[in-house]
Length: 402
Image 1 (tube, rainbow, N blue to C red):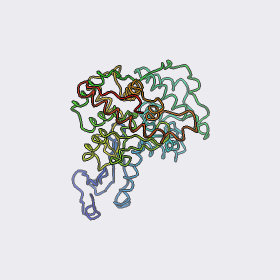
Image 2: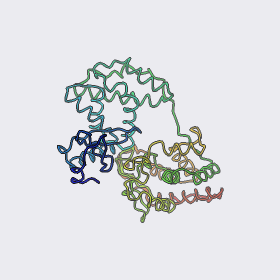
Image 3: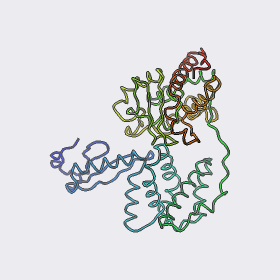
Image 4: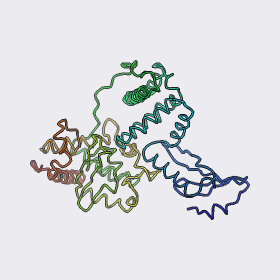
């Protein structure tokens, strides 16, 4: 950590050198005596740097405040460099697609879950902004937009192409509503992409094969953080994004409870996950490693962020399970299929899966509904998995437990 005295005492050298303060912030000392605040950070896997001003115009306290604001932007899935560029463009009176997209993102993201924000920013950063970000929004024609989404389609990512087109449409419509765009060109592209077929996540449901998978996970030789995530995925069967973003503050290991806030849930409602004793044991095992931070499964490169979206999937592939055989999301289908076969009540299973409830009155009671039954079911499910993991020793889940 830097001090004001250390900064003042720093003398120029023949070449520039840096004094580190922490969390990416450093002071660059120039050969002519200038002192520049800069911050290094990673976004979408790329190393980036921003200037935070000149010392002493920007003091140590101010530099740290600016650094902390940038870290908050990163935690919300927004590139600080993009914000700076968009702000500068707005000052110049320019209405580029990138400027409009960022304004739209900042306006609506408070109502979105963290996993949804991650998906939207992924579409923008990788598929739309590199080609459209600097273009005047009123100048973008359907043909240009079609070239962009067909580039996505050509790499075999048909669903991503449809989603990116949908995201672009929402941005254009926001531009129309705010007077910066004349029309939404995506309306002219209906039917231009190949249609999506109904898709199901690949999942293993045969008990013997489930046992093989569980033993393979136990033999995983990658990082302990990823291994623990894999070990919990079948036992909790939450959505992958909910698992990756599990926070220590959401857990009560003594009472065996995990309360996921509505902001992280697909359906926008708080969700309760009873923790079987096996899950509590695994969480206590990793607590000395990650318990001092925010996330149970922190990002391997940027601890202030959760585990990356591809980490668990890559681990499954490393274990030899192809995309047609098993996915991380498939653990939900695995649990649902077996629990239904074992006679558990469908409403109890669906409530634990946090599926939507079409009846609005009934939905208001979803969070607390069937809690005793869900506790018994989750413990019975974990006992059942223990048996499969121990070489096919199947402990039947008694019908009527839930």
